[in-house]
Length: 373
Length: 160
Ligand SMILES: Cc1cc2nc3c(=O)[nH]c(=O)nc-3n(C[C@H](O)[C@H](O)[C@H](O)COP(=O)(O)OP(=O)(O)OC[C@H]3O[C@@H](n4cnc5c(N)ncnc54)[C@H](O)[C@@H]3O)c2cc1C
Ligand code: SF4
Ligand code: SF4
Image (cartoon, rainbow over all chains, first blue to last red; front, side, top):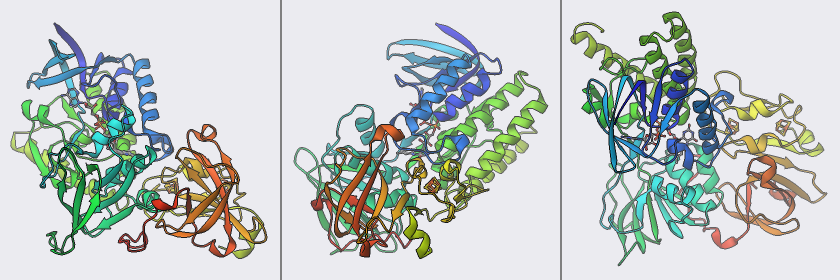
């Protein structure tokens, strides 16, 4: 089977849905494709209220933002293809798709917007393969999507926002959180998130890491210890914690294999999660007509993912002549203003700087290749 | 906080110490008692004189960082209203343990009022009373004391 579209959006998280809405409402034929049975990406397991401004649905719970976006996608006439994995993408924008694990098909598109999100990082230590050691995101999916309690007594590794929020949600689900360990000498995530669990009695052990997890058939206990300034364990500081669940919240990596396949140039930006496809301010990669948005373009947040999805959409619309250059510029200006606001403060400034680096790297590559086409 | 204002009626207390991009507390307060302005990463500033103690800002805060303190709940007791997202809900009159910002036990308290979760999109508001002497330290309450750990804790929310 073969299908055609003006715009193919890969990934139906906040970035992909917003890209779909932006392009669909201006008349383009848009397909949004996602491997899950439900669209929404990360949003559907986020049962907590989100930060942001009114226009980014602050104070609204993540899954409700997802529902709102879905509704708008429908209104914009976007075709949603679920349970469909994109396994390949050629530089001519032919996407290989497997539907429901059996039927295969191709989609050819004029423009592609990659909004594939991120994957969770792992961490290796003796015992890390025991059942009961899992990604924090996996634990969250078990609890909030499948309603299965992943354990009764948990240890969280990592104190970024993901570690802190999932700890809080484990408590809500009725699991005891014995401790959160953090190798750095400070808590990584927002203090308000840390305070939520600290006042409920959860120990946040900074300058600590997990050394080993023990158990016969599954996790029975974890050994944690203090680390020195070079992040090496200090002998004699070990402690045993009796747990049956060890969650890893040690960062995310942009999921951008399809950009490699399509021939995009990459750069290494560790503060944004690792290798990131180079892109310009309008989210276009080094392959003309291919855009990237959301966590796939550098790990940030749902609010920035939504704005980036829109930006990518505006670029696609303009180059397909669905909107005028003037209209595109005015939409871009507004979105860039929002992004500027979201990339402020102690958790935002560095993201702004890294993004600027990505834009200038993109420019260098394009100039070398002989001008912009 | 001015002592006089604190005594009259419940007043908002915000514990939001970092410049994060967030402002629903400002948007929801019809009294203009919470100011953030632009950029929205500014810290919220409260104007106690304008705060009527309505409590509307409590459930919208994604940081669960807003509470309402009533110093003169009774001659000997103060009360605190906090957002609560756990089940089972405590019952009116139930005895609870009041804790500080690090979950350390401070003393006993009593549940005065529970606004069920349906009213505020799944966030309950719980008001509990405790000895006036503790009013500066009390941040939250817990139902079971065995949840609490001892004082050898490493994390200092005040330090970063
Ligand atoms: C615990 C936790 C709490 C968070 N809290 C907040 C918060 O309070 N506020 C906030 O702003 N942000 C928050 N975030 C971050 C936010 O969820 C992410 O930044 C955001 O979801 C990124 O959006 P995205 O669209 O780029 O990717 P995702 O939401 O990850 O969506 C990508 C989608 O693409 C699909 N996909 C990937 N590859 C393929 C393929 N080859 N074929 C088909 N489909 C594919 C994936 O399955 C997924 O559905 C939180 C994240 C976590 C994990
Ligand atoms: S309690 Fe009411 S009046 Fe006071 S700051 Fe909150 S919303 Fe405003
Ligand atoms: S809503 Fe809460 S977290 Fe957001 S700025 Fe206001 S007090 Fe801070």
